[in-house]
Image (cartoon, rainbow, N blue to C red):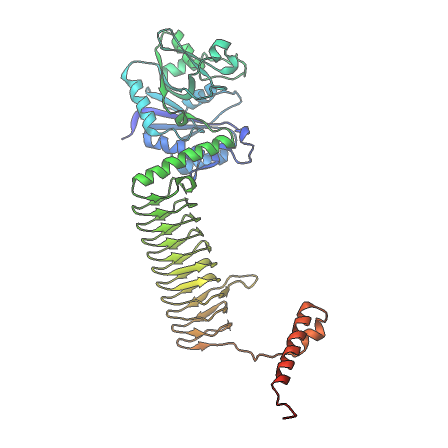
Length: 489
């Protein structure tokens, strides 16, 4: 149910220079979702009446993600005045004039903060008449963060940024987590008084707390026990740490749901992936994107699947698969490469060192080893011989190969597309198939074998091959002469 008294402001205007990247910080991936995507998902879960995102750096790229992940969110562009206080001040202009509820301010680079923690903040804030409630925490290293300064009675007094803090204030270990909940009217009034008279020349949102206190309003700070919940991401080291923490939570969640994960430390599962009970994931496995793995399937070891469906009871070993479908009971691997558009039917097989692309392989059909199958349809219960290649590209266009059901192709066949192989066809080893083969036929492309005697001695004289050939010839001649009858007998 929509909370008509709640507005959420997402601060997404920062440049994120410490990432040292051409990609905006908020668009770096985390568990298969952009960093800001996690914040947007949390905002969606809270079902606020209004969500406002404040943008500036790479605004079009950020807005594209916001529109995709949370349609209907309002977009506000921050002007030249720096600081979080100014960002929130501009965000308030996007609210209806008659809005009198609460404003929750969150940062776009704090992806692990969950809706449950924020719901608790909202409930606690509304229990008593306070003008603002914020989250705080006690990290192992408070350096660089604004400090929470409390009164002698333990109430929140004000927040001071580290660059503006005294030595005594820097000694405080409780920090501001950067998550705020304000009554909108009190927030508007206080922001009007915030200045840029500080070490960074910015309009600090943190100054609002002190202003509210001086105006006689009550404010509160709620400590969060787990600091990682409110940690922001500013560089790639922090991104990696957040990814590891998120993945550990995801893996544990699937374990508790009935999935066997043999080695959680080497198993990565994206947040949008779906796993059924009794799935087994072996070491070195990555289940990425919107992949789906059904009951009884075994994936791994050393396997990566991206946006791929793995059917019930299927086995996928040492394989890289993207945008593919592996149906029930099928087996894939080891060392298989499934490119987009691959569909392996029930009980089918894609074996060792096989690459497929835009290929539909029917029920019970097999491509056991050392083959490339691209732009191809294979019927049911056919067997593609070792080393078979579909030559699907003529240098300009891609063409399709169609192989019927109950076909048996010989080793090292080449199908020069476009070509159709009928049902029940057999083909000989080494065949190059350039023409359609009618159902029930045997396809051969045989040229007489020709041996050119003495070619090595003539063309490769002095090589090890020539010496070996000469020795073998001499030995064979000696063997023949010793087998002749003795002339004296």
